[in-house]
Image (cartoon, rainbow, N blue to C red; front, side, top):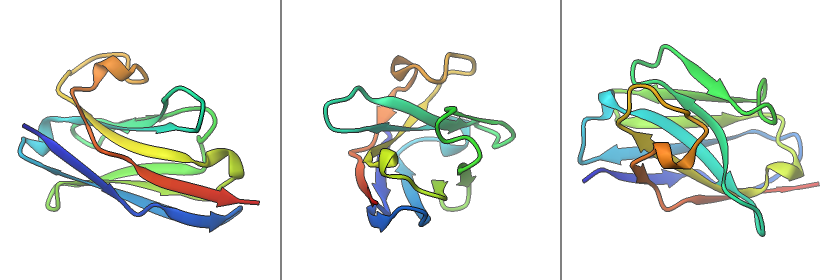
Amino acid sequence: QVQLVESGGGLVQAGDSLRLSCAASGGTFSSYTLGWFRQAPGKEREFVGRISWSGGSSSYADSVKGRFTISRDYAKNTVYLQMNSLKPADTAVYYCAASTRLLSVWSNLATYNYWGQGTQVTVSS
């Protein structure tokens, strides 16, 4: 059973940066595609971005492209979400997720087998 634990959330001001971490345990970290999603109050959970099992490719939602970057550290079994130029619209609970699939629609929640508990990010104006 894979466990994912997010950390690094908090309250920041618009324009600030924040880095979220997601530590994985209980599985083969190097074989998973890892994704980040977010859910704002009253809204559906939405795709933020993902990084391939090899780390060689990544993709992002248009709303965060150019501001957010996903990376992974195989030695630490950890995936990161670097968020720059934060906006109030980025306020949400952020979740990391792991998928064992080799090919899929990465923005689809059903693609992911495992989920973390989420970490709150609040961006004030």
